[in-house]
Length: 218
Image 1 (cartoon, rainbow, N blue to C red):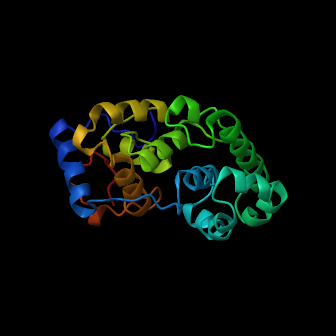
Image 2 (spheres, rainbow, N blue to C red):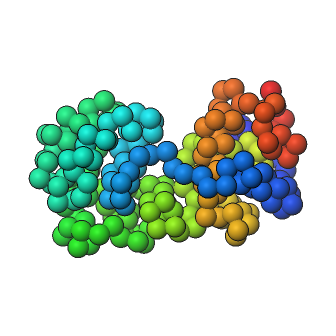
């Protein structure tokens, strides 16, 4: 188990209270990647791998003004795409993936974003986490994308401990009350990004302080 994993799980009533507090503080959480449609969301998610949302958001407005559909992206081409995203880490590999997935969307999916995880994961640069983000944000599916923030919060608090992202996702899907599943991954990402930080958790201001099982609260 990761270092932050407690020996005990949050009780079901504590889990309910935790999510209720997150919902009260932020009733309609939103993803922080800027996009204009499901396609640009998919592209932004692919570009965000090993990069910050803030960094991606700086690069994409000019890109999406020129290429907000698979057809337009293919017309733009890999070289010009690289120019737009050169400030993002691994931009050359990501540019290849964006061009390849745009072509696949046209040839295999009629230019539409597929609405199943299995089909999304056939696209270059799209893994399970990315697919879950697209399904949740674009189509309102009750999926939970486990990134580093969700993984940390789940283990540190005792909400849904796991040794890897797969175990944490499975635990979250089982332990999260159905009424909170739609926005669960947004609440947990934002909580991990701004409160339950890796190096300096903001425990004194945390709305889950009394529920959390982390022994090293600040």
